[in-house]
Length: 236
Image 1 (cartoon, rainbow, N blue to C red):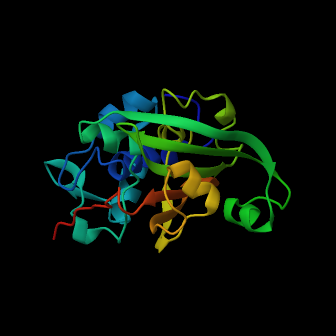
Image 2: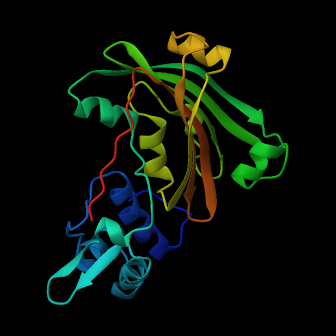
């Protein structure tokens, strides 16, 4: 496993949460056994047990005597929206994903951004802007600020072969995500990048991801309303 600033038991919790948030573990699915997690992370049984016990206490897992541990049913999990990677979404539809990076830079955080990332005003943060395409059609503009403490090599990543979401899952395992979702008009630069009119309504998701003690990133995701449909599943 890659080195992580998280405490050992939090690494296990973040891994399981990332599997759930990414849709790799669904309600009712068996999670890796404590023995498997011990070997995977090189940790003691006590440490792994603490992680699983806390996840069960948070309502994310259900421990069944004699049968192991499974992901809790949706009605036992607080209202959440899974963190989906745009590349995975496109590939699941059987289409081709591509990406054009418009901006990759270091900027000084203003007061609002610094507060969102838990940093001091003026702190240096990484900034990326890119457009994601489905079969050559732009479907998402991703404007993201990243905390260097969570992902120090972010600016060196080849975003033609991976996405920011995939990379952050690897180096800063997700422990929590906060969302706001609204219908809004794009800014003029966003409309130009997406090849739409500035008067065309868009779905705008603002997402803050947290990894252990760090706020890892804050992203503004803009989807043309006529090209994207936000979907989810609920099971009661």
